[in-house]
Image (cartoon, rainbow, N blue to C red; front, side, top):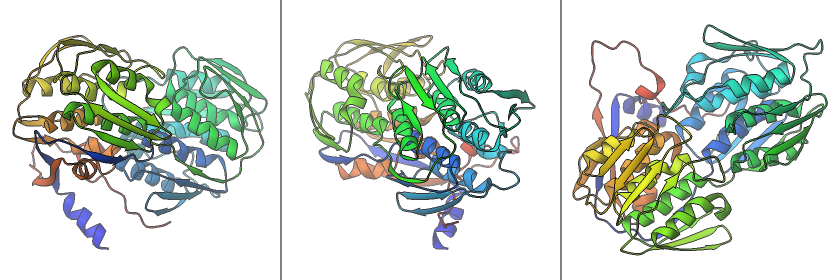
Length: 462
């Protein structure tokens, strides 16, 4: 009850961070479970009527939204700290028609179309929302589901899909993706586990999150081979069991902490992290002049005082991750030389450039390519993150700014980083989270999920 009252009061306030610059970091940084993996594993729980237990689930607003969505269609969820237990043995009458507000608030929820179609034979789901970093079309999802034997139409901003076989069951197929879409690979992978026959996915995405999904599905009784390569083979089964599974460490959070070490020229030890998931970033940090040692799931980094500029081009795994492009650009403003940063994954992922320029960074933006002139001391100011990763970049830049910065847009940061400020403070940062009153305006009568601070669902057990 006290938590509900506190969250109700907080919903009338806008949070921001006050960050004191020029502070050194040192010590140990704990990495949480991977948000992008946990969300899809939660969706995969819909494939069985037995209990799926997930350990190492980060406490984030995106996780809360997915929990609310699953509850809305009939799942029972018990939550205790970083453990979720999900049981969906009785889908309700609206299970095939997902709530618009929740799906629109969380793009990752669109992958529910795969398991629901496989289990129910039909589903109606709104077009996805999420961070405004580009179009991210769902053509690959739709073509894949059609290849499995579904009739898929878009009607009034909804995707309506129905299995056309009399048994309302999908059929295996050979599917070649036109591009390495993570979401499409996850969607079709889940749908194919309960399809009749064998499905082969070609030009599949290879991200570690897909490997995590395949591991859990196989633990549930699926027959999947090749996850982590460009060709995945799925032999359909009649049913899946429940299981207990541990979510892998968040490679993007770990990478953000490595960049935090480099930008502050500070030594840090980061764990748990899987070095193979971060190879592209580690190579670039080493080229800059950082000293990095890996031992098991522990990464230690020491940053030289003088670092050199390096160029990066984002690309699907195992390339340099688009989710670390903004934090890495913040680092490049502090090094010697000029770096070229090219974004090839999303067409609208340079929102942080303007904010870094407001801090005094010298950046020339040409389309989706930024030329960053390093060696300039950024100055503290009031800045706003326009999406999840750009907000993280604002925090990192503020750690080395002259003076005290104010970082707004925490509704984005809270989606993907668990206790971000607290973890940095434990390593020596000086970050204070506070609130200001919401300014009411008469010209705006509706609010989206991302525009409000009503971002938290309660953690009562279902």
